[in-house]
Image (tube, rainbow, N blue to C red; front, side):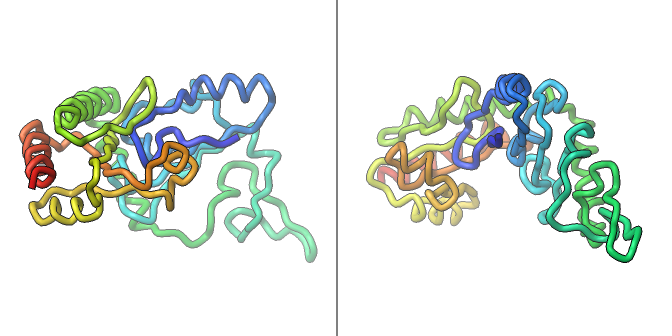
Length: 239
């Protein structure tokens, strides 16, 4: 069983802990894709009950591109052998035999991006210093404020789902070319992205959405920046 804790195309925060209870009761292995949630909200693998958790360093943790980590529960790891092994993940013990290391290092490679790993640690240290609970509260306040501003604009429809919504704010502008809007906003030093069916086919296609605009907030954003963004978007829509 695998789910994305927070998808790339919206602010939905999946009930990962509830899913964990179901999979644990059923004896099903559970992989949580936390690439959008680590650094954004509290993530506790023990409470969630996942067997594996993967994340990408460059997203809300704000680490270097090309970094990430994998959590693997010790009880689960002991029964799984990766498809690819090298002399870091296993020991060559006989002419035709090898022994896989006993912990999660079996999933690591010998060659790695050590400078990136150091950068990832620095990003994690900063997140811990700020406090993940404080980060989560700040992000929700900014995102809720942005959604409220966008909801007031004519022709704008918010597209985020879920009872709990995170810092990824997505919306559609009626009759507009979202990519053209993105470029026009970038010319004003306002960065947004467009999420397409390329990475979110089952969700967006199922909702009849070709693509959505995505504005991701983080702790360094200000209320003034949200006002400037929404004002610029409104002017582009009216123009």
